[in-house]
Image 1 (cartoon, rainbow, N blue to C red):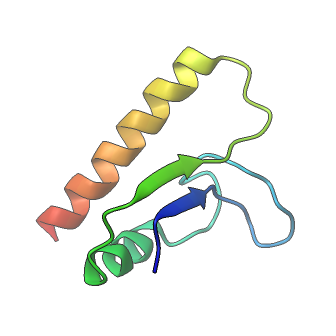
Image 2 (image 1 turned 120 degrees about the vertical axis):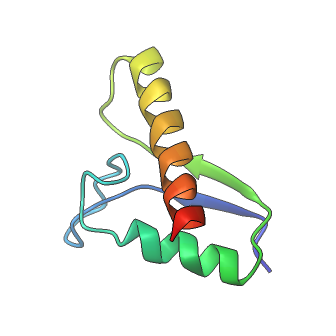
Length: 74
């Protein structure tokens, strides 16, 4: 049972805590899997090393909306 997810991207060698699409995670596959189990929970983006919080929040919102929009169109 999943109620919330702590997500970030990386390259599989260290715990980078990068924005989605900055590493090599299969985000389309990730979203597809969440839809298959009808995930209704919360996303928490765990990001490190970002200094401009307003810009980061805009980027996260855009990435999130685009990722789920793309999945709906596939």
